[in-house]
Structure formats: C-alpha cells, structure tokens
Length: 147
Image (cartoon, rainbow, N blue to C red; front, side, top):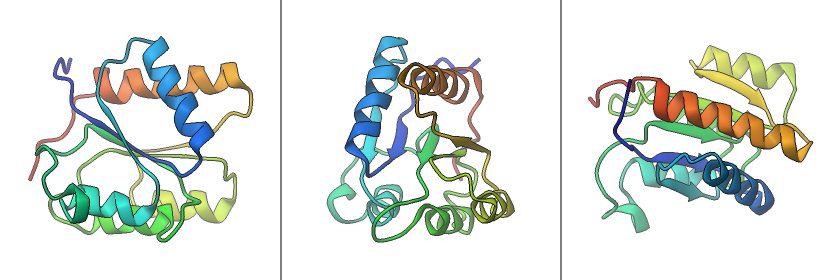
C-alpha cells in the first residue's frame, strides 16, 4: 500500500465542482494535497513546470482527475499530450466529466485513460464518487515510478 501523500491534480473549470470535490476529499480524510488548475493549458504547464508552475515542488501527481470540457485545450487533447510525453505517460489519469458521449469514451480509452467516470448530479453520489476515486487512486493504488 502506498503510504506517501503524493499530490492529486484536479483539472476542472467549474468552480462548483472544484468546491464539491475539495469538500469530499476533506470529509473523507483524504489528506493528499490537491492542486487545482482551471483549463487544459494550465494543466500542461503544471505538468511540465512552465509559466507560473516553473518553481512548483518536484514530482508527478499520484493521479490526475481530468474534465473533458475545458477552456483553451480540452481534456482529450491534454490526455493525448500526457500519453505522448515520455516523462508523463505513466501518470494515472481519470476522466471525471459530465460527458456520456460515446466519442469521448472511445477517444479517452484509445489514448490510454485509466478510468472514465461520469460526474453524478446528486450531491451525495458526487461525494461518494470522489471519495472512492480518491481512496483508490491516492491511497490504495501503487503509483508508477517517475521516468
């Protein structure tokens, strides 16, 4: 079992979903630091230590929770960039989105997403989903080594 508290990266532009996710992590005692970026461009800058993230602490996140419908660069393009980058390609990525579209599912799995979860509309179900994802990916799952 992984006992280190590696960071979680949440890529989400909807402030309400960010607040709900942060509350769910907190209520469920998931103590990992959660870094939040608001669009696909920021996500890639964060992962590649560019722009305002050039001096962030080193190390890849233990998991990336990635929305599809993002400003600037959408989640599918972010996933593609992650999977084609030698230093990032092994990071677990969970698509956490409102999209149930078959084309999004197909594109995500074709690019090697680790899981695809549709955001529940109900608050309690949303909290349960975030708790389950956080516990599995940040605590139970053993992350890959950094390249």
